[in-house]
Length: 193
Image 1 (cartoon, rainbow, N blue to C red):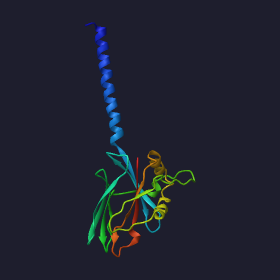
Image 2 (image 1 turned 120 degrees about the vertical axis):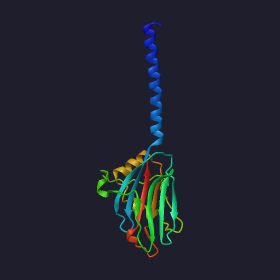
Image 3 (image 1 turned 30 degrees about the vertical axis):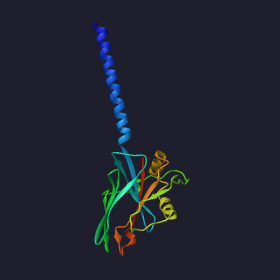
Image 4 (image 1 turned 90 degrees about the vertical axis):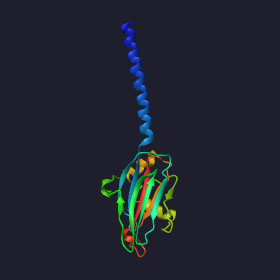
């Protein structure tokens, strides 16, 4: 075999191997990694308190959140998951106060930048309440009050821009029930990209 032909064949083999690996890497990255934005708003004051960007290993077209709820006879819990990955966990106490256990810590409200505009954005598909049996249910107007406290955040707008047809998932975390203290209750909002 001539040396020139040998070098051409090696060059073609390298190009073919390089092309195959690039295609697989980009496809894998696009389909398997995403993010969910968790935002927390106080129930009684409707003030935005903080949030967290959660990295997820899998993603689908819709943010379908399932829950595992253990009713508190004395102590209970709630776990919210997306494609079996945890998004939120918290304990619930009857005649006491539980706490959020996942994520362990949220970034404070001061961490989140505000958009330099006065327009109001509304989720095109509206809201998807995460309803736990025997826990409080609300109307769209209640969600709008909460939404108004986070719609102006740059990250909120970034997530809506990345997936404009998503429904905004919203959940009321009640760590105290029975004669619980509503001052401990929190709205938890989820967006994905």
